[in-house]
Length: 88
Image (cartoon, rainbow, N blue to C red):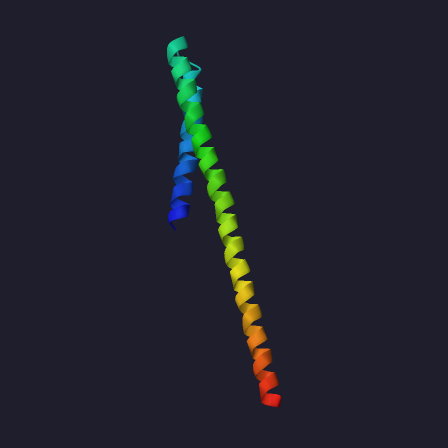
């Protein structure tokens, strides 16, 4: 749940960055430069965080799936051993 809220806030920040850039085009040179820098920083940081959270989220899911598969294999091996012992 926490990551979903963070992603929504980052998307809002991304939109805010674009709005800042839009209004920066209408201002005078000094304010325009400040607006471009502010909007650019907001967009870059929020996009980088979104991509990082997506990438890390995928890695976490892969790791948990790998662990789950290993536990299934162990369970299967133990069942096979128990069946072999029972046959003797």
